[in-house]
Amino acid sequence: MNPEEILKAEADEAVERIHIVLRVLDTFRACFSEYKEIVAKKEGVKAWNFDENLAFGRLDQFKARVIEILELFETMAEFGRLEKVEIGGTRVRVRLENIRY
Image (cartoon, rainbow, N blue to C red; front, side, top):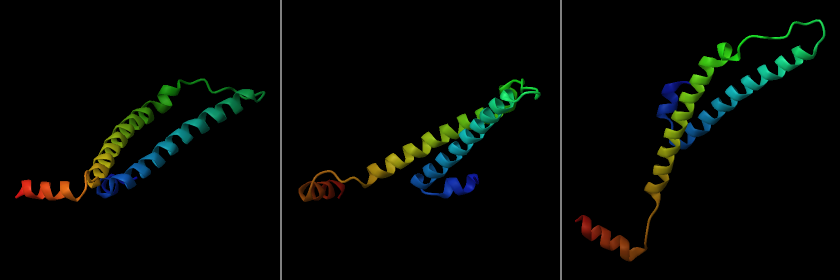
């Protein structure tokens, strides 16, 4: 994920890309856990006994930052949708145009 591309993209598109990134991060963590269990079940193989925070501490911090960015882009997308909403009918539109001028 290139940060410049995300910032230049439309908010809805950026949200989709960020969700992909979060799924990749979750899948990576799930694969680790799965293989850790497989190794633990095998006989004659030493189990993995290191602290997961050492392996995933920075990854978890990165994920937290990505989630904050996701929330920002979701808010931007929501405001973009609100911008397109038109309240009222033709009478309201005429009145608003009169107020503007």
